[in-house]
Amino acid sequence: MDKYFVIGNPVKHSLSPDIHAMFAAQFELDMSYERAEFEPGCFIEGMAVLRREQKPQGANVTHPFKQDAYQYCDEVTPRARKCEAVNTLIFDGSRVLGDTTDGRGFIRDVTQRCGASLTGARVLILGAGGAGRGLVTALQDEGCARIYLANRTPERAYSAGMALGCDAGSFVDLIDERFDIIVNATSAAFSGAAPEVPTTAFAECSLAVDLTYAALPTPFMRLAQEAGAVRIEDGLGMLVAQAAESFAIWTGRMPQTKPVYETLRARLAASVAE
Ligand code: NAP
Image (cartoon, rainbow, N blue to C red; front, side, top):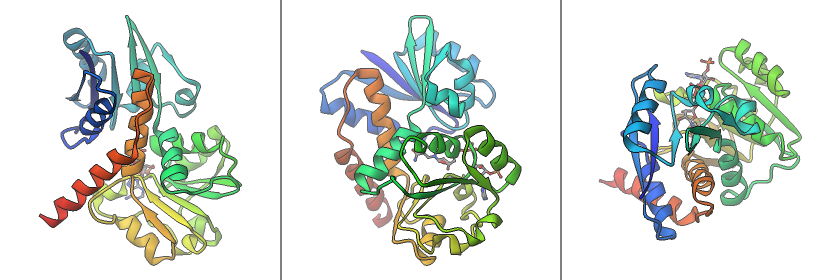
C-alpha cells in the first residue's frame, strides 16, 4: 500500500487525512495517509526516522516546516523556488522532489468554486509570510490589474515586494486604496483577532477570503462583511483544492473537490449545532 503523511506541529486537528481518504475513495485507491508531528526545529531528524521506518511515497508539509522542507529537497519546482516554500514532497528513491500547491489551490478555489474573475482584478494580500508570498507568485500568472502585499511589519512587506515584483506596504498605507479581492494570509486568527486593516480598503471589495477556516465566520470575515465586502469566504475551499493538487501530483489523478468540500463544511456546521 502506498503511504503518505502530513508533517507539521501541531497536526492532530489536520483535516488532510480525511480529505485524502475521500479522494482515494473516488478512485478506489488503496493508500494510507497519516499525521506525523515533528518536534520544532527537528525537521531533518524527523524525516530521517519517517523515511527509514515508513518508506512513504510522498508527504504534505504544513506549519511550521514549509521553509525547512524547501531546504531539504534535492530538486524543487520553479513555483516552489519563487516562494521558497514546499508543501508537497515526492520521494523518488533516495531523491526528494518538492513543490508548492497552495497558490494553485487558492486560484482554483477562488475562480471555480467562488466564480471570481482574477483578470483585471485589484488584489490585496494581507501577510507576507509563506502563504502570502505563495499567493503573490501564483497570482502573477492570472492577469490581475494589481497585486499589493501588505504586512504588519512593513519591512517584511517591502523586502518580499522587491523580491517578488509586486506593490508592497504597511496596513496604514492602505487607507486610500481600494481592492476587488482581499485575502487574509496572516495568522492573526490564532490570537482571535483580525489584522488591523483600514475598513476603507473594503469599500469596493467583491470577495474577501480568510485562509484560516472555522465553523463560524472568523474575525477577519466579520470585519470584511461589516466594512462592505459583498462575499466572504474562509480557507476550507483552498485547503481541499491544494490537497487535490498534491493528490494529482502523487497519483496522476485529479479528484473532485466539490463533494469533499461539502462533506467537510457540513461536518463543521454540525459541530456548532452539537
Ligand atoms: P507565517 O509564515 O508564520 O506568516 C504569518 C503572517 O501573519 C506574517 O505576515 C505575520 O506578520 C502575520 N501576523 C501574525 N499575527 C498577526 C496579527 N495579529 N496581525 C497582523 N498580522 C499578523 O504563516 P503562513 O504559513 O504564511 O500562514 C498564514 C495563515 O494562512 C495561517 O493562518 C495558515 O493556517 C493559513 N494557511 C491556510 C491554508 C489553506 O489551505 N487554507 C494554506 C496555507 C496557510 P509579521 O511579519 O508582522 O509577523
